Length: 309
Image (cartoon, rainbow, N blue to C red; front, side, top):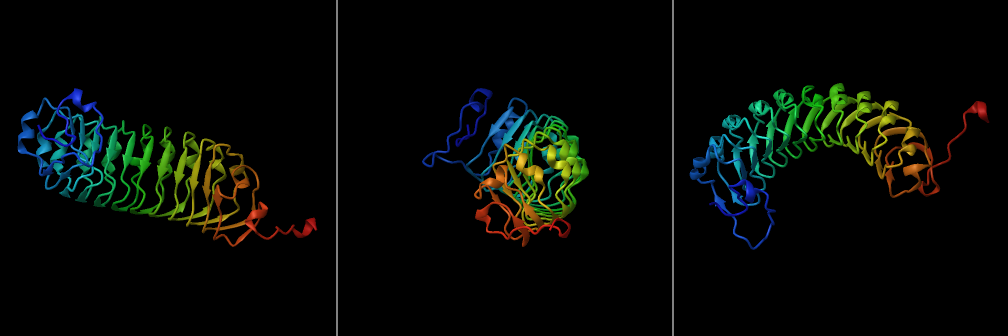
């Protein structure tokens, strides 16, 4: 049996894996002998080791439901032969050195619930075929070199709770279909090159607790429709090209603990209630046409319209 937090039975798979710096870590490639468990093995845990080379051998493990080979030094492309694992419910390949495209064959995993590919060197487009994974709850792709538009089919997955594609080079709009993600709790599309307006359909995602769209090219106003997102505790729209006034409804979000609207083109009066009462809870720097707000902001007073003077 391979050592280093590799479990080859259901019983052991439920044993917590403690990352002990003094423990022995498995080095080199996964042994070909693992293929002898082709149908019997359901869960393979080989995370936090020093595995390198190819993982082609795992494509023979057709009985796998969970595959965890995260936090290693694996290079090359994700093998297309991984499509021979139709029972997969969880695939953890994050924090390696995988390159190339996300294989479209992953879209054949109709039972897939969790897909972790973050912090690799993956490039190319997000395959539209991921839209076939109707049970997908977590899709984590952040910290890669992915490009192109966000597929409409992928942001139409109603089962998704956590969708993270931050720190890539995605372009185009955030599709209106994002409103179909009715169970979404966390959405992070920050640090990309997304443009267009913030879709008003986000108003349907009433379970959202964290929304991060900062460091993009979004323009237009902050939609009034987003007043429905009263479960938000984290909202980051910083470093975009947003214009218009700060929506007054944000001060009524009683759960909101952090708000970042900095470095946009916002103008007008800053609200003074709710999150805006604590200067450490929000940021509006870089919006030179703002006025009013709490005293600690040091902003100029707002001038009354001529007809009110």
